[in-house]
Amino acid sequence: MMKSKISASMMCSDLIDLKDTIDIFEREEVEYLHIDMMDGSFVPNFGLGVDYIRGLRRLTDIPLDLHLMVKDPEYKLQWIGIKNTDIVSVHYESSFQVQRVLDWLLPYGCKRFLAINPATPINVLEEVLDYIDGINLLMVNPGFAGQKIVPSTLKKVRKVVDLLKKAGREDITIEVDGNITLENAKVLKGIGADIFVAGTSSLFKDGISSYMENIKRLRQAIK
Image (tube, rainbow, N blue to C red):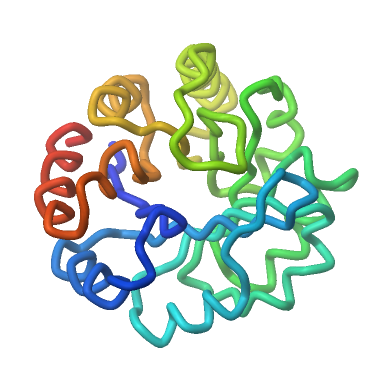
């Protein structure tokens, strides 16, 4: 069984404490920094951009988990400075030719994930299983932090686990993103999730002084 990993949602972090936050994440061996890139078109919000990513890379060697919530991502990949240690999630709903997007990611050597929104059926995954390393299942509608989980997504994770078993692709990583409370994380771990995007519902609660303890609690929930 794959070791559970934490991906810290950086849109929830306070820029004033960014360096100290990164120091805590490095000491606690947080596996990924989750970067929500949003263009105001694919989702109704603007998110972290290329300059933020460049700055973050100067602060830390923690791999980035780049979640591209942008239209036509295939034409924007070269802006980002993708490294071979990164995860890059592109949305099925963001391009008419999603298989081409996944192909264009191949030269970067990164992990290629396909993200799907709560209402997108899982059968869209079937034809791209040979092109992906992981699936990012959105547990809320993307765009804003602090939302409550869409209840049907819990069943959806189970359906994806079953789909991967039937396809003989249990090597594909399952990431869950949105309202990952300690309780939800524990349930999702039991179903089969591998990477947990931690934001205001768990890791970034109650200010920087609580981050270390929050990480420990989340580790306990997903062990």
